[in-house]
Length: 442
Ligand SMILES: Cc1cc2nc3c(=O)[nH]c(=O)nc-3n(C[C@H](O)[C@H](O)[C@H](O)COP(=O)(O)OP(=O)(O)OC[C@H]3O[C@@H](n4cnc5c(N)ncnc54)[C@H](O)[C@@H]3O)c2cc1C
Image (cartoon, rainbow, N blue to C red; front, side, top):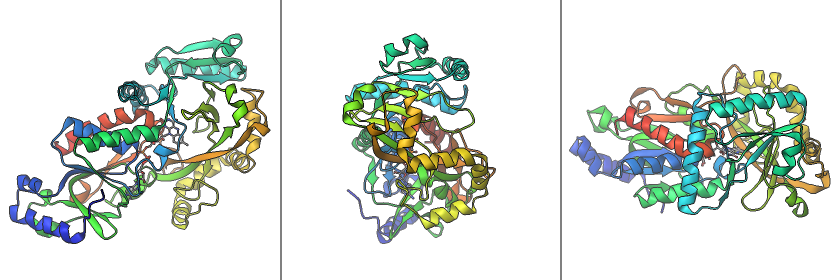
């Protein structure tokens, strides 16, 4: 399905554009109205939403891997979040709650396997139990449906072997395979006439300015090795490489993407019955991630994790995956030193438990004492695209940017689509589609 967009045939198309010299004639050539860079769930959901709204639009997705959903979308916990944790009023909170409703409707409509298994956030001491009250209030402010506080003696009604001081029950939390959902979005997009080009790694953007005196109508060339695609407008949703794509159109390097690997353990076969719902700790406000949790997967596995360790490659799913370019960029980024200094002790702890993974069982036993180190084995991993500012602070909400100059003005970058962007993807698609309509007058 990968069409051959060689420089020669692009030039032929562009000469046509030159001769015609008007918007309508540009449309009659092979120039795309909109190209989305990145075939993850954010790119595919947005592509689908745009073609649903504008059926005549000529659109493509370009993806550097040989298939879509190969990175964050294909390596995650598979949870449909209800939207409890996020700061009320933030885009993250709004898009999660809205996205979860949209996605449940979509899953039912398309008959995609999913389960509303619920989630218990379990406090292990009095201090954590107090923090549950704040989480409950946040959830209510965010319009999370049917949240319920569960006292100590009732926890076992929700999860038979789970212990704790108190818990928060969220019945609307579910599980699904996000890569499968992304593939459905992509299929919808293709059925509406969209094109998907895989093995297409974008290396830069240029403009064929010599072809047209009306600069704004001249297509942007989306360059890859030995090929390029012409487009009027571009959206990038490149996950772990989003900052690099932004820099290609003159944007600032900050926020930088710093990759954090999240490693999982798996529960062995004869202990899988111990976990039927998602069991999460009360998040520690000093740390950026949600903490190691129990998650039943839609394929029957039970995931324990993820931890959070600095990855030495943006796509480094194992310790031995080291990418020199990625490491040099990280070393040159001042924000990383400030971050490491701030989180030195917990960071070291995460590294030790990453190497000697059965040590992590100590934390899990607090929730289900029956789990021992013999019951776990090493599982898969995902890499989070964590956006970081130059002062070492982590970016918590969405970041959009557009570049400089004639090319940059016609490119929008989604630089940070923080977790749970899979849950929020359909709402993000709508949000970005509104933005594209406003900024590019679609
Ligand atoms: C460990 C982990 C657990 C998570 N758990 C959950 C969860 O339970 N629930 C939830 O809702 N969310 C979860 N998330 C978050 C969620 O997975 C991500 O927010 C979401 O998948 C992001 O999608 P994306 O499309 O932005 O990025 P990605 O899926 O990473 O897609 C970006 C795509 O861009 C492509 N690309 C990059 N550079 C280029 C280039 N130069 N040219 C062409 N293509 C390019 C990449 O190959 C990739 O396919 C988790 C994330 C991680 C890492």
